Each structure stands twice: as C-alpha cells, then as structure tokens.
Length: 444
Ligand code: ARG
Image (cartoon, protein in one colour):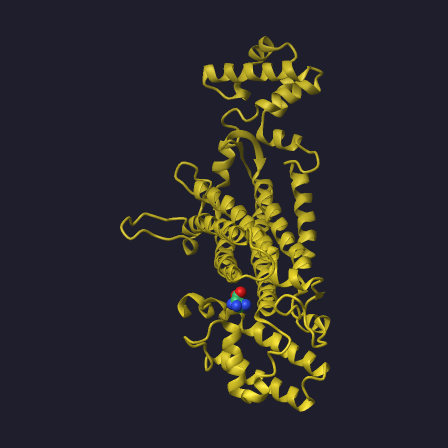
C-alpha cells in the first residue's frame, strides 16, 4: 500500500511551491485570528529553515512520507514543534494544495519552455536573415513544386513556433487562478481569504468554484496539448533537417558540435538532435492522451486518480527543456549549401505554373493555360531539356500565345519575384514578413 501510494519520488518537484503555499496559508490564518503574531513569526521562521534545508538537501522525504505535502508537514513539525507546526493544516487539504501547487509549477515551466522556444525561433530568424536571397525547391508531397526563398521556408517554421509561444501565454490566463482555500472540495469554514492567498502566490485571483478547483485538471490537459503541439512542430523541422543533411539532398551540413559520430563507422555524422526531437514528440503526444484517458469519467470532486496527472506533465516540460537548447544550437549552426539548392530549385519543371500564370496574364483562360504548360513539360521531358531550353518554335506550336516573352518567368528569380502578394515568396514580401515577426516576438 505504501509503495503504491507514494508520490514523493516525483512530486518533490513541488517542494518550493508547497512551502510558498504554506507561508501564504499561515498569513491568512493569522489574518483570520487563528494564529497570533508570534505564532506567525515562528511559523514563517520554521518555513524559512525548512526551505533552506530542502534546498541544501539536509531535509529529504523518507519512505514513510506519502507525498511532498505530508513530508513537508513533518519537516515543519520537526522545526516548529508539534503544537505550532500542527496548526498549519487547519482550513486546507492536500486536494486544494496539490491543485494549486501543480498550477504554480506548470506556470513556471510554461515560461521556461516559451523562452527556450523563443531561442529556436531566433535561430530560424537569424538563418533567414543570413540567407535572404537563397532559393530552394519548394515542395508539396515532398515532390518539387515551385521555387521559394529559403528564408520563406525557415520563417514558416518560425510562424508555427511563435503560435506555440502565444498558446503558452494564452493558456496562462486561464491557469492563473488559485484553488487554495477550496479545502477538500467544499471550501473553508474558518474565514480564510482565498483571494489573499491567490495574490500572495502570484495568481490573478481565486477559482470561482471550490469543487471545480479541486477536481478539474483541464488546465493540465490544455498545456499538455500545447507542449505536444510544440513537440510536433519541432519534429517537422527535425524531419527536414534529417532529410536535408542526407547525401542525396545535401542542402545542409550539421555542425560537428550538434552531430554525433558512429562507434563503428568513422565517416558518420548523425543528426541525433533531430532524431531525438522526432522521437520525443511521440512521447509528448502519449503524455497528452494518457492524461485525457485518466481524466475521462472521473466523478467530481477529487479522486486519487488525479495523482496520475503530474508525471506526464513534468515529463513533457522537462523533455522540452532538454530539447529546445539543442535544437536552437543545431539550427543556428547549420551550414546551408545554397549553390546546391539553387541548382535544384528549377529541376522537376518547377516553373510550369509560371508558364500557366503568365498565359493567364496574357488573357488565356486558366484551363487552357494549364494544359499548354503541361504540354511544355511533356515537350521538354521528351527532349531531356529544361523548360527554358524549349525553342521559340516549340512554344508557338504548343500555344500561339506563348511568345518568347514567356522566358521572363522561366528563371527561378523571375518566378520568385512574381509571387509578390502579401505572405508570398518574393524577397520584399519575405523581408517584410520577417520584420513583422521580429516585432511580434518583441512582445513576448
Ligand atoms: N498526492 C495527491 C495528489 O497528487 C494529493 C493527496 C490527496 N490525497 C488524498 N487522499 N486526498 O493528488
């Protein structure tokens, strides 16, 4: 029973927050007349000593302590004596404590994860700035589609990660309410002020409903989703880095500091950071789905099932804290082979759409233009040449509107420059997009 019940091996992470909660609780007990000023002073002193002992490792949980809350209550009683130390439990329950402390831990973690994500975005923006004219084959279905700027592609990843940072911030607005004072479920009868505790602990206010405060964990599920989404977004970048650094692609080379060797093959340079990112994203998805399954069908209010809420979240946040600096390092030090990417950009007839759209600008209906561009691809393919190598006569034979002027759009730079609508790949648009992103990031 003790082995099954114990949670100190993971919830010890909440020790600092538990002591902060105890300080706030001691103050409202004092304010309600349930602790004298001397008792409050003694209590706060003992909590200071306990905090120092926790920090130094002089106080640790024993096998007999069920959870962080009972362990720290023992620590307080050892320091303040049973008379005074025993007074702190009045008007609070581990149910409202744990719901509050878990929110505090997650709010801190969300800030750290957001900072780490910001460093990855900064690395992407720095690469985009450094390569503001480099081109690459843009892909759909992993097949060559249309040429794009490398900066445009890198900033696409920066956009999704910026939304993740914003999701973390938006989540905080809902998580910033304190369940302390909800008691076991029904609230406190001792005249304690939940708003005062909330303010003391850095919350925006107390929860509206003590049953909801102790029983709900949607704040945990919601951030588990945000962390899983972040993991998935990082995994998509990681997958591309893995592909880009293969001998077949050769778009980029990993810096030695962010790659690993093989224990047997001396030539190897493996993208382990990217692979661990891809792998751990599965773990983050598992943490989200596991928590949702734990919550499903639990009657109100607190059930011990809820003790299962912490490990998946501690894990998701801590895995990301390991990953994010490594991903930022890997991306920031990636060396792109822009000549290779430029050479590949027009291959696979990526300028075929440009022929069709040029014809549309000449007044040809798109259905006919699309067909004519397809015919150009077939003609070029049959002769084993690029679209720009078709002769004037070949163009004219395919469609009378295909005058030699069409060659204007049959270069990668011409194609890219022509996509100059808001959000498009034209260099000016990409530069503006980057500037707007930098402004948006400065708000975080
Ligand atoms: N350790 C528990 C948890 O993490 C809190 C304790 C509540 N236990 C109880 N029997 N009411 O959820």
